[in-house]
Image 1 (cartoon, rainbow, N blue to C red):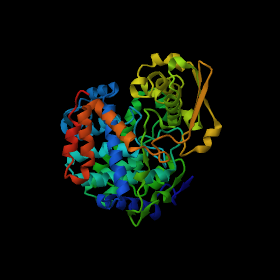
Image 2: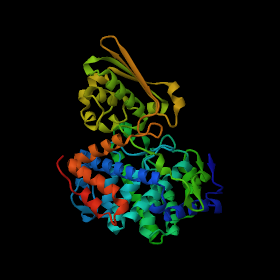
Image 3: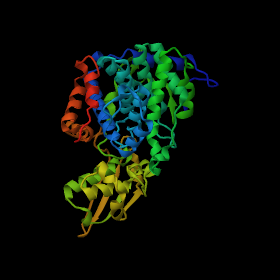
Image 4: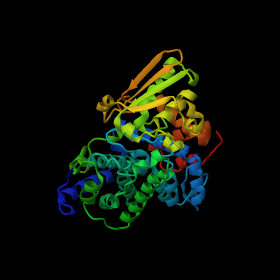
Length: 465
């Protein structure tokens, strides 16, 4: 369904005004007027995003990609490297790390990953242009808010498209344009419509086939946002209203232009969607997190191991079943496999990245695990990503757990301890314990500092954990 008032693909004044209001809201975003709760969410999501990209950079696929790109020296940090690179290469390489571990942030009102994609673009661009810390934070919050409104307006992406590198690209482009143009709302409007007219759309099924070029989805989206921002700030023009007259009608599931002004009043943010961001506590597709939470709870309560298990019955909701990979071939499609993630949790006592690397060790246990769709779990969508795990033990006992809302979502918020434990664990893989603490301190100090230098310097000090 399309509701934008356009005719023959051309924009109306109403559709162009939506973009104008969004652009003004981005350009006038000020950290000083962002409510305290939204400030906390922004810094928490920034820390989470940096930690996920840093840990992702240590994956063998990302090391290989850096070797292939062989970036020349430049001003922008590349995660996993002690020296900087040109901003184009830095944004490409950092963007590629986003999906490697499947630990990126989520947005509870629409499937997508706003914080980490916006951060990947703005960090590289901010270093290149030597922007102040407050300028960076203004753009980060403004970009997240813009991306969230685009997500609300499109009503989801069609089932054959992947949500990563999709609608968030428009938000990242608007944020980056604001940073490059000095918060010129006309340039930001061109950045929004320009990114929308490019209409990135990616094959959903690469993940479940283990096709690791999937990691170029967020990388391509991030570099697209960067290039659009440079063009818009230079004065290149976009077709006015393309967001409503092209992107919405052709690449959205259920587009309503007016929904993009939810929480926008007179070109300013009247409410902040960044408080609806959530944190992924498992290295797997979020559709499996109900299942992952269920097996985690059973392991904690019943204290059984691989040798105690006779069989496991997993039941999931329809969207989880649609993405489930029954026979994973590598650690990418294993993160989309209920059998692999449940087997890894049982074998190693908890689900973590390393447990998904050697699928051969998981095969005997995976053969005892069945996965099926339970229609009764579908009613909990869209906020619920429900799963049931039923374990039959060798002594004849049967234990079962159903989880409707996974931990980390707004319905079951992540605790400060869980959030910091995730970030510290991921950062320590690259920077060691002391380095991880330094990165955390520099992120939370940004509102009180003048530049990004101390933060980005901490991100280049790689250590052996």
